[in-house]
Length: 120
Figure 1 (cartoon, one colour):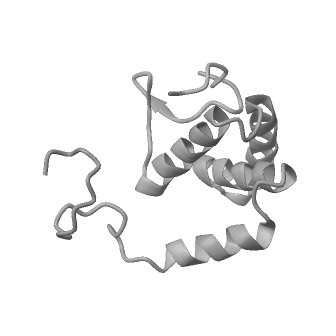
Figure 2 (figure 1 turned 180 degrees about the vertical axis):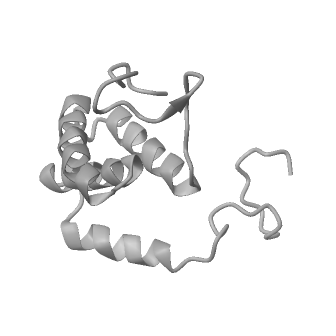
């Protein structure tokens, strides 16, 4: 579920094609979903996240950072400010995920019954 205040245009609007959200890489969709799920769980107010995102987008554009790099940075900031996650913990988890092989998080040929309803 996408938060109602997700802008369709303006500085915080996510990339779209024919009205649909566009993710160039799998991690972008996961970062988007993580922010939405945490918001839905009450971890932070969407307005707080949007404000952080706009700040990162304005700073990131001259540095060549993409939209979802700024999205992830905003999420990290909001979680740190609200005390949900400490800065070093974010870095440790990000480093651990970065070392995982491509496709590690969703490969149907891995043979263990992960049971999340794909009919396999």
